[in-house]
Image 1 (cartoon, helix red, strand yellow):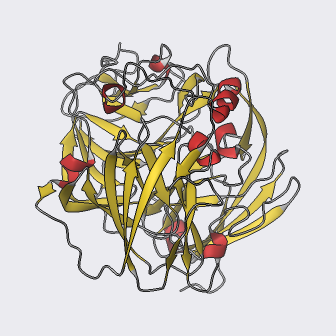
Image 2 (tube, rainbow, N blue to C red; image 1 turned 90 degrees about the horizontal axis):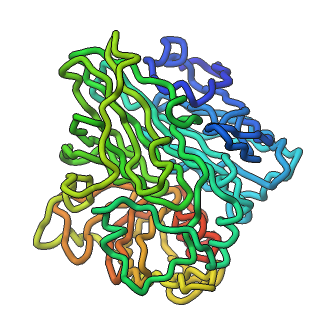
Length: 477
């Protein structure tokens, strides 16, 4: 080990999607030092769009952070914005004081304030970071991708990090918080979201978006991804939209999914499209078998859906008209937990010491309340654990939309969906709980550093509306 030796970097803007191998110097260091500065930014990813945002290091998304598993990172955070903020390290198991939740694990960092985060990023995989101070910082642009390199990963010929994100119409966001938004649903035809809608449904929590982006730009200004015939290409894809599930396809290609939320699948799954809930990440591979140009794109009924696309091309095909896909999922084989996990008669219940049922509710038109067991944060029932507990959490969703439930500081295993056990549980940190009476069951081990760990819906509207609780280790309330 190289004692007290640091590599300092001011990582570049996220618009650079390619992931070259880490340098030998970076790999050799004990600690990588980053600086993140939050400051106002006028974000203009598409013609006619000018958004008063807040950014890390002058870009939306913030810089791509990288570390080798086993290294430490030291992040000097400077808040030069006009709002209180923090940095939450999503998907990381780290000391509770480093989790970055204002009012729970640390005080909010005020405008002009600073905070030092230091931890060993764990587990390896595709992680991310974002604001967690209840001032809508993530909506405004405070988020970025964090890749923790796993030495066990299979090598790729080319690798790209892709953040799917969107520019909110803030008037519609404020109406959605009140439960009175008139923004339409824009999920694609053939999606579970559209199939689950009832004729009499009146949605008041939908947010509208004025631009759709990948890595800080809208098509046709997105940075093209150059590949070669014969390449095995790895994509690391994050859905950073604050309220909508994303469907992602690559024209004329199937995608082999190997990781969910940065965690390896027990068995890779080949699909036509990814289904990515808010905050979820998927690692997916494809092979380039012929020359061409193809669109990697979000699938949506939004009239501006075409903006969320990037060209993948082989040499000499940079300016060729790219092949695309329809904005429908009819007949499309998209990723689901059930397909990835397979079905079984039952799941392993050995060692379970604590069981918790959680009823997800709220969402009535004209009300901004989103609840767990009929209560809103901070009055929601907590999950009290002791170190060493094995905890089963079963969600029942009485609302008419899926909820991307996220647990801080732990990796859980999805073991059951709508009453069907999974033969191969999925290791995750966010999972979509199906709507209209759907159920989903987790198991997690209380083996993380003791403290208070939030459990909440990652839909920003629902989280702000109260759909949040916490896992509390004994003696840490």
